[in-house]
Amino acid sequence: MSSLWFLNGVRKGIKTERYPSTDPAAAPQWPSRLSGSNGGNCPVDAITPEGWIKEKCIFCRRCVPDYQPTGDQDIFTVKKTEDTFLKSFHLFPLDSGACGSCNMEFLSIFAPQYDANRLGIFMVNTPRHADAIIIMGVMTQGMKEALDRAYEAMPEPKLVIALGACAVTGGIIGNAPLDREKYHVEIAGCPPSPYTILSAINAARGGSNMRRDSGSGNREAD
Amino acid sequence: MRYYRFGNPEGRFIGNTEKYAAYENVISEHRHEIGAESYQNLPGEFTFAYGPATGGLIESVAFDLHTPGELIKHVGVDPYVKTRPLKIRGLAPQDALLMVERINGFHAASNALAFEMAVEDALDIDVPDRVWYSRLIMLELERIRSNLEVVKRVCEPAGFGVPQNQISYLRENVARIISRLAGHRYFFSASSIGGCQISKSGIETMISSVKREFGEIFNALLESKIFLNRLQNNGNINEGDLLGPAARAAGRNVDARLEEMHMPYADLGFKPFIFDEPDAFGRFYVRSQEILASTDMISEALEHSGNSSATDTAGASGEGAARVESPQGDLFYYVRITDGRIEDIQMSSPSLLNIEAFRKSMAGNIFTDYHFNWESFGIWISELAVVIQ
Ligand code: SF4
Ligand code: SF4
Image (cartoon, rainbow over all chains, first blue to last red; front, side, top):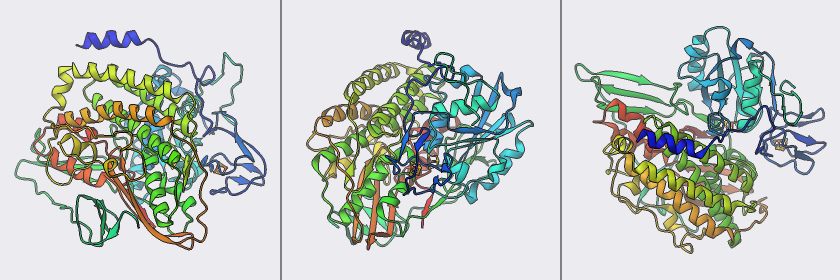
C-alpha cells in the first residue's frame, strides 16, 4: 500500500515554487504593502501624518482608494539576524491568543507550494529544541506563564519572532504579548501571507531573499 | 426577531451563550447545564497533563488525561487558557464586524455571516437574492477548506505523508481561490451588513479541479486499510447533544442549512450527508463527502450570485438572532442594537458541544487513538475562548 502512495506522489510531480529566490507565484493583494497618501477612517490608526504603519494595519480595505495594495509581500522588519541558523532553523510556534488565521498561515509555509523544509526551516514540538519562538496573537492572562516558560526553555542563541498584527502591536484585538523591543523580527499582516512569513524567517537567519529571476533585490530588512 | 423568540427550551439544543441557551428557534434565559464532572484517579492511575503550548497542537488548549498507562479513563479539557477579551459592545455594527471576523479567523465567513444576519434581522434589512447566493458560496468554500484541514490532520498521526501533503497542497489552492473570490485568504472584510463583495472570474474551473483532485485522494484513502483501522471504532459517540459532522456521522439528520430561510440551499436541492458510523472514521467520511457536495453547490450557485454594498445602520434599533451551519456545526448570534450601536451581543460556538462530545468519546480509548480522535472533531478553540465585552 505504501508503495502505491509513493507512486501516487511521484506521479503528481513537483509542486513547490522557488520563492523566495523568485517572485511569488500567487501573491495576495491583502495583505501586501499599501501605497498612498491622506485618507482617514482607519480603525487602528495605521494611517498617520508620517505615513502608513504596516505593523498596525489589519488590511481591512477601508482606506481604499486613498491607499492601494501593491502586492509586495516584504512587509516585515528584521532587527537582528543569527547566521548560525543558516543551515537549519528550528521554530517553536506559540499561540498566546490568536484567532486561528495566523496559526494557519504559519502552518501553510510547510505546504508543498512553499515547502519551508527545503530551506532547512523546521517546526519543533518543544522550545528546548528551538532556535526561535514564533509568537502569534494578543496577550492573554492564561498564556503569560506558558510564554515565559517557553522563552526560558530555549537554548541560546535564540530569536523572538512576532507574527501578525496582534503579536506585534495588538492589532484590532488587544495588547501585544511582549514589548516591541523584545522582538528580533516583526511580521506585519492580519494574518501575514505564507510568502511574507517565509521571507521574514529566511531573512532572520541571514538568508538571502534575492529574486534571482526578477532582479527585484533584497529588501527583507526595511 | 423574525426567526427566534425568547421562551422555554424547545427543540434541538445548539449551545450556551454568555447569558442564554440557544435552541433551534428559541432563546432561553436559563443556560443549559453541561455536566462538568471531575475525576478522581483510582489506585495506579495518574494524570498526564498535555498542553497548553505543545507541538502537535495548533492552538493553545490544555488536556488532563487520566490513565493507568495505556488506556485513557477520563479526559479533562480546558479550552479557556488563551481567552481573549473582545470589546464589541458600544461599537457600530460595521466596526463590530471587524472583531467578529477575528473570533475564529479560520471560520470567519461563518461568524461574519451569522452576525450580519442577526443584525439584518434586528434592523429589518432586506438583502438581494444574488447576495444570498454569494454568501452561500462563501460558506461552502470555507467548509471545503476546513474539512480539507481536518482530513489532512487525521492523516498526520497515521504517518501518511503523501496524502497529507497532497491535501495541504489542495488546502493552499483553496486559500488562493478564496483570496481571488473574496480579496482576502480568510474572507476578512469580504461581506458587510446587507451586502457582500466577491469576484467570480475563473472560480468555476478552479473549483472543479479541487473536486477532481480531492476525489482521487479520498478514493485512495478508502483503500488504505491501515489508515481506516486507526479511525474505525475510535472515539465512538452517539449520545447527548451532537452538532455538525459529528452528529451527521452518528446518523442524525441535523444541519442548520436545512432550516435556512435566505441562503438558497433548498433551491439547490441540498440534502445533508448522513452516515451511520459515529466514530472518527464516520466523521472523516462525512467531511470528505461534504467537500465534494460543497464543490457542486458552489458551481451551481456561481451563475446566480452577485454583490451589493453595505446598508447604513446609523441610528437604527432592534433585536435579532441568526444561526448558520459553520464547518463544525451550528453557530448562533444574537444582537440588540440601540441607536446604531451594539448594546448586547451573544454568541454560541459549536466548539462547546464538540469538546464535550470529544471528551466523552475518548474514555475507553488508548493513547495512540487520541490525536486521530481529537482532529476528527475539527474543534477551534479561538471561538470558544473569547469573552465579549
Ligand atoms: S487597510 Fe484598514 S487598517 Fe490598514 S491602513 Fe487601511 S484602513 Fe487602516
Ligand atoms: S493578527 Fe489578525 S489574523 Fe493574526 S491572530 Fe490577530 S486577528 Fe488573527
